[in-house]
Structure formats: structure tokens, C-alpha cells
Image (cartoon, rainbow, N blue to C red):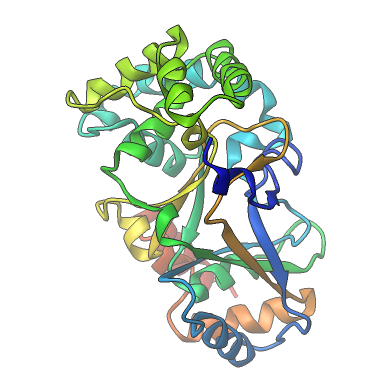
Length: 314
């Protein structure tokens, strides 16, 4: 392993919080804005920092919720264990929905759209879209939160990237195969990097992963660096989905969740903006005045019909 890699500071592992926690350097705002204008100013100040090329955002109605892809939530422990079977269950009962999908990443995006928890975390390039979700009412009063992610160029990929294929196709692996990949990485960690890569890719579980990747990319060479299966990537999706287009959507794609801290460069910095519970309703009304509401963010006809119905029921 390269000396520069050994000397990096320890980052939080992807599984640090509950099952899986985004590995980030964390900062938080000391004062929470209480108006839409205040949040716009805060977002503008944040995004004006020149350190990173790309910023994206995620809104959650409860600030206490971890930032985690759905399949890694504690309540979906069995789903994660049976990820391969769940993927096939959905495709088998609705094959026509997936007929045009060319890659496993495409399939995961569609599954996420229909409500199946996956290894994708929804984010938006529009901070106000994230703010809309952070102001959603819940079953009990709670502060909301907008999380801003500063994405290093090294962690930014497009939908057709080889790195994205590697991580997305982990959904085709059994739990035992993913456990084997983790154990293999740990057993090779003291070897030189080139030797790690050679032995890692010669394992039967990795050869199985190669098969899935080659079904999408026949040219793919089996030279996966072990660390690359454990780190998250920001992914630019195809803008072929109306909801993704309406929400300026994108995804953070997770790999295998390690069981302990790992070393890695180019961390994704995370900044939190708390949304006080009492400020939610006025902020949401102000967002609606700017055209950011359920029917514009969810352009499906049933959402538009529900909004029209509600507007005449008051």
C-alpha cells in the first residue's frame, strides 16, 4: 500500500452510525436560519466556497435521522441480507418496467423510484428542493435538517462509469459473497497495492462480481482496487426520469459497509443546516409561493390531482 495512503487520518467508516454512515468530515452551522430568506443566504454563503466543484443537498424532516441509504437502515437488516433476492423478486413481477434499463445502476434508480430501499441515497443539486423535504410535517414535532455535501472531483462519477458498475452490481451478490469480499480485503491489507489487486480479483467471489459487470461492459478488466468497493460516489444519473428532472436529483452510491474505520483520501465534507420545527410551516408556504411544492417536485398525475383536491377542500 502506498505510504501516502497509510498516513491519512482515520475517517468514519461507512457503517459507523447504525449499519452504514456516510464517511465525511463534519461541520455544522452554529445558528439556524428561521426564514426562507435566511436559508437562501446561508446556502449562498455555503456554495460560494471555491474548494469543491460540486455541492449537493439532502433534506430530512427529522434532524435525528442518520444520513444513510435506505437498505442500510436498521429496520431493513433482513432486506440487506437478502438484497440479491429482493432485486430479482421485483424484476420478476414487473419485468416490463425494467425492460429499457441497460445497467444495474439504472435498475437501482428505478427500484428507488418505486419505493424499494437500495444502496442509493437521494440528493438534489437544488438546496431549496432539499429544504422542502426538511420542512415536511411528521407524526410528531421535530426539527428538520438539510445536509449539504461537498463532493471532491475524485468522488464524482457519471451513470456509465466503471466504478459505478462495480458498486451497483454488489446488489447482485449474495450476503455470503459480500462477506467474503470484506474478509478478503482485510486479509490483504498489509500487502503492496499491486499484489492486493491481483489476489483480490483472483478470488471466486470477485470473479462472480466481474461476471455481472461484464454483462454490462464486455471490455471490463478485472483490476478492481479493494478499497474502491467500500467508498461512496456521487453519481450523475440519466435525466430520463421526470421526478429526477423535477427535483434536480442525483444519488450517492454506497459500496460494501465495512465493520470498522478505514483510511481513504478525498472525503466528502458534510455540513448541516437545522430547520426549527416552528419554522417549517412558514418556510414551506414561502417555498410554495416560489413554485416548489408537491405537484412540481412529484410531476406524476396522481400527485397533481391530490394537490388540486386539497386546494378545494379548505
